[in-house]
Length: 286
Picture 1: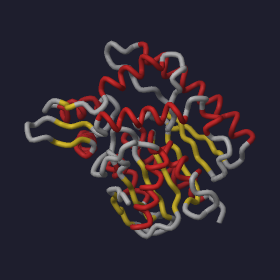
Picture 2: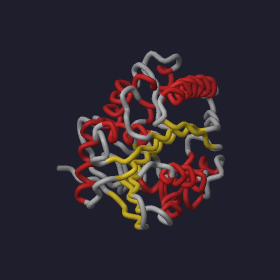
Picture 3: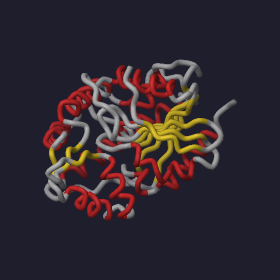
Picture 4: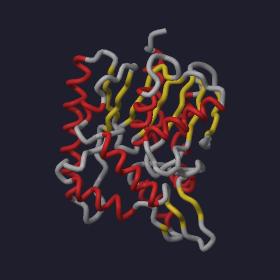
């Protein structure tokens, strides 16, 4: 049994379990969690190989789901609404799928958690960038660079610093091990390519829990030298929007919303994220 690192934010009301994105940690949820505890019991979990959770190999969705279930059992959480951002959104859906009915999962929330198959136009260029940065040893100025970059999105410096430090491991020479480490990151990418090989619609086929899917309303500005990424991102987001619109028109249990933020929504606009989650939970039957 592998137990994952978790943080209990406390609170009273329906149980929420919060999952973070790739290369991040549960600290990304600090600001939203502080708001959600007013009407919910809130627990956040570091995914395997991230934050303070142990690594696993191979990094597969079934293994991650199993470790989350073991962790929630150990924490005395019998049922929850599972809320995930980015990679965490994918895991939230898969965790709910693996637990049909209400045995463990009351509903799921996916905050901008999508991926592109290897055949998607431009995926090879995106993949090259991801592979180049996966599990690298970052220089001592890594945290300062993260703070500076976050300022472009209006993320406060203290929040940017705390979340950057929580998502990497300091090394004795002053450098930083980015997480997950390279071997696990490559396994993780392969798993996402497998899941999304045919797109969002086949991925959600047969999903029977109430589900809120939230897309980012603004695109991430491309880094210098990656101006092509803007066109890729716009094309991919539009494709996902069209699939979600078609799904929600025929699947009443799937709700779709949009938030005025980039993909970094729970760091940029934690208040809006908390409000969306709380509203969805209030509207759930039973």
